[in-house]
Image (tube, rainbow over all chains, first blue to last red):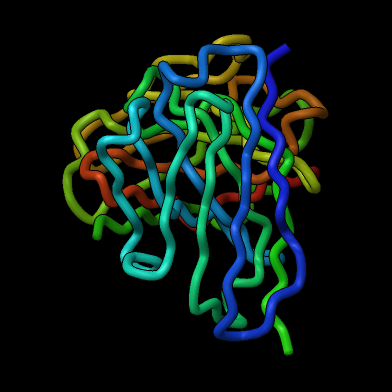
Length: 120
Length: 107
């Protein structure tokens, strides 16, 4: 069974930091690009970042560039999202997702999501 | 940034009816467009990629079309499980964006 499981969500104060993890299983993690996407309560989807299969290339949405860092450890099958200077409006469910065929830009496998609440 | 505008915002239909959803891009995305379905409390599911290719396991009643700036997702005959929110997404540049979504609700 192919799976993505996010962890690390929780409550953080405005201006604070948090690191999300996404553990992959059931497929060759090191062969796929990976994405982070978020969804604020009752709102639509917002793409955040992609990292190439080998970690050499990363792209970010303008809204998080310079504050969020996507990374991966292919030896552990884990994807990360380091989030800094968090804002209240970034309260959302954060999803990790597998790229369809490496770096297509589309996501064919999603985790269940991790809730991040930014509040004092 | 390429803006994707989906219409209508809400589509009220009955099971068995045909649904046609629209996604318009602010500039050409060639055929680099996907459609996702999302049900309450669930992660999105990829339906269509590269404008018209069905993803693995997606029923034949779902079809996609279009190129450039105008795209459609058609559900030929709505099943009860198809009532959900649908999003389009482009990958024309590496600044990916999603549309605002269309809710397909039971009439």
